Length: 297
Ligand SMILES: N[C@@H](CCC[C@H](N)C(=O)O)C(=O)O
Image (cartoon, rainbow, N blue to C red; front, side):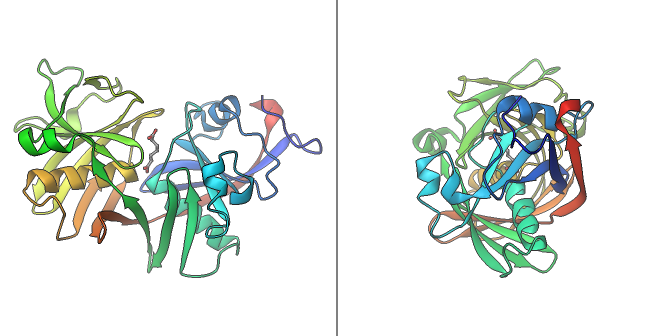
């Protein structure tokens, strides 16, 4: 169990989600919480804890462990410290940025319609747009651009229940993604994602795997198996990777139109920005506040 503030064995939390990618949000405004892998796993446990695909700690950027994050403090006072449900630390979480920003607004910590937050993948610009929150996710890249341009693909993905592996494309969204366009006749809804898809060659830092069905022009449906979690109902970085890969395959490597991505938990918009950056827009909801007795976890 993590070291906790001496005066408290309980922890206040907020539960939130972005297109049903759900998170336990911890306001650690004094940077007193030692959120280690064990505590993260216990909080995220859906049976014995609060439950979530991940845990988000809201902490002053100046107090981050990583020097590269602390360097952002003068431009973004708050750091989204994101952990997957298995306790692993991830570079970025697209849906998490909207939940994080919505929490900062609700608490009156940030009051503007536009502000920047700090993540392990650098600064991310937030813009409130009606009911949606838009995040400038920053720069993206194809992991093996030469191979992608020559073949369209750079790896193979094997999904349980299907004898043949499918061609896939690796996209770096600051975190790793492997995108598969499903062959004709394969039912997206029927895929077995209880088991992790097997990716070859093995990605050095693991990967999130997106399975995509094309629904129409600039419109796809996607399911995802997330690194450090399992299948989730949405993944913001994955949605961007899927839209960018599909646009690439469609001959529009720098997307000139907005893409709509349907996930089991809702709908998201992906927009290319100048400078090879990409914006993700969608809803965010804070659904509960509570206090957990850490001795019971
Ligand atoms: N759900 C997130 C991504 C969270 C991190 C991912 N599982 C990883 O390990 O890279 C999103 O909305 O982007």
